[in-house]
Image (tube, rainbow, N blue to C red; front, side, top):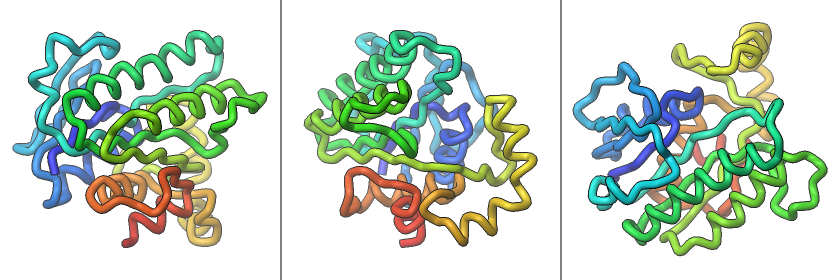
Length: 222
C-alpha cells in the first residue's frame, strides 16, 4: 500500500507515521508537512510545504496512492468559528478534492474526535465544524472514506502532544491510562492502536464508516 500522510509532526500523525514505517504492508509513505521532521527511512518521502490549501503545482507527486491518512488538527480554544472552519474544513477539503480527482481508488481516513456532531445542531463549535467536514468527505467519490473519532488518546513510544496543557495532563494521568483503557475501551485508545487501526481499515475496510474508540481498538486488534 502506498499512502499519503498529513500531519506527521502532530501527536497522532507521529503515531501513524511510526506504524506505517514499521508495517511491511505499507510500501511507501509521502508525508506532507509544514515543517521538516528528523525522520529518515527508505519508505519515507517528506514534502515540506507552507501552503496546504493549493496543490496544482505538485499534482504529479500526489498521484498513484491508495490511502490518505489525514491527521492534521488543532485545538479550537481561542478561535472564532470562521477561523476554525478555515483551518479545519477548508484545508481538509482542499486536499481531499485534489486527491479524489487524482486517485479515485483511494481510501481517505480522517481523524475527527469523540463528540463530533454530524447533524450541525450541537452547541459546541468544534463539534459542528468537524461534523460538517466529515459529511463533506463522505460525499466525495473516493473508493471509501472513514472517519475516526477517538476519545482520550494515550501517547506511546515517546510521542508527545504539541499542546503544552495536554502534555501536562498526560504526564499526570499516564500511570492510570493503561488500566482505564482496559476498563473503558469505549473512551480510550493509544497512538499505536489508532495508527494500526487506520492502516488496517485502509487495507481491508470496516463495517462502519464512522469509528468510535471501541471500534478503533477492535480494528487495531484484528
